[in-house]
Length: 223
Ligand SMILES: *Cc1c(COP(=O)(O)O)cnc(C)c1O
Image 1 (cartoon, protein in one colour):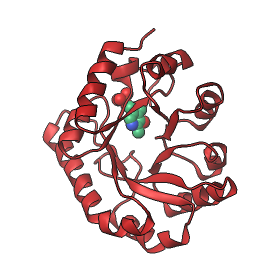
Image 2 (image 1 turned 120 degrees about the horizontal axis):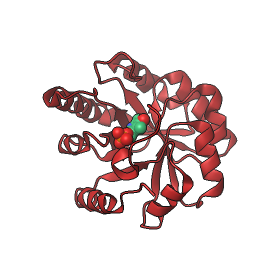
Image 3 (image 1 turned 30 degrees about the vertical axis):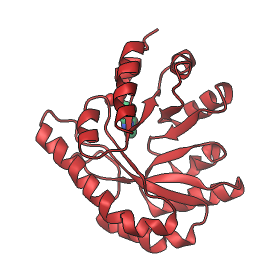
Image 4 (image 1 turned 90 degrees about the vertical axis):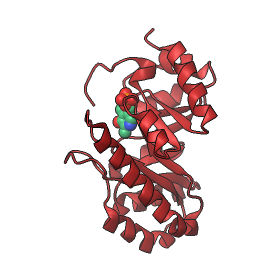
């Protein structure tokens, strides 16, 4: 098994001391690996692909908090709406409306994070400040979603000051949006930081990190 139990314990302890929530990113990894961390007390797991998440959720423990951290297509929301714990990557009002609709069908309120485009790379999804403003103006229509905070992915770069600057920018938006988000519930989650940059993300004020390869080993195919 590729799960690094020692590393898990070390990271978990470090983050718990700082009151940061650890999401173990298990995409592409087998159920046994998830089970191994679950047995150590880990409850929050992150997945990127709808079908893979549905398959895993069907057979693993029912008290796992399943985080959807990938790019979610509107037409697939219905497959995860009944059980998903937190959707990190909401990057349009259209998607938010669909989540709201599917949540209503399940009699649920689904917690969501708005994804902000902070990296300079073109390939990363996310909203800009204007789009965040649009959500703000229309959120009162949606009763079955609760926006709990923001999520972002920094550039894959060796330039640590650049990465730090991106996290800092996201944190400033998080603070700025705090007041308007109160309208729609709580505003407590700033999801930023992955295996390569989580410590910096926490230093810059992140309250939730998404860590995969440090815990489960490198993945077999590129994400
Ligand atoms: C895959 C992924 C992660 C985890 O990446 P690691 O570098 O393996 O820790 C975190 N966040 C998102 C959005 C991902 O897609």
